[in-house]
Amino acid sequence: MEGDYTRHSFAYVVPPQEPGAGQTVNMILVNEETVQSRLAANGVATGDGPVLVWHHCKRPVS
Picture 1 (cartoon, helix red, strand yellow):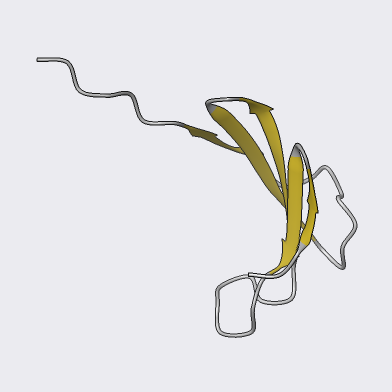
Picture 2: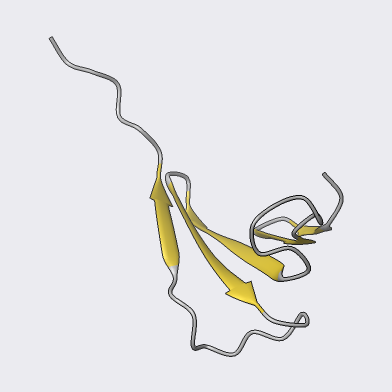
């Protein structure tokens, strides 16, 4: 996947065959276990879309 990468963020344009094609996804690393992402229309974050939060899965404890 091609996109704009910095140490704590990544942005890419959704490919034509995927849902949301043409929109830009902006991802920000919050900490070692959390990433926030948001869709931006025409590469401009509007602040209107929901912020999706991903947390690293914890190891199962038995």
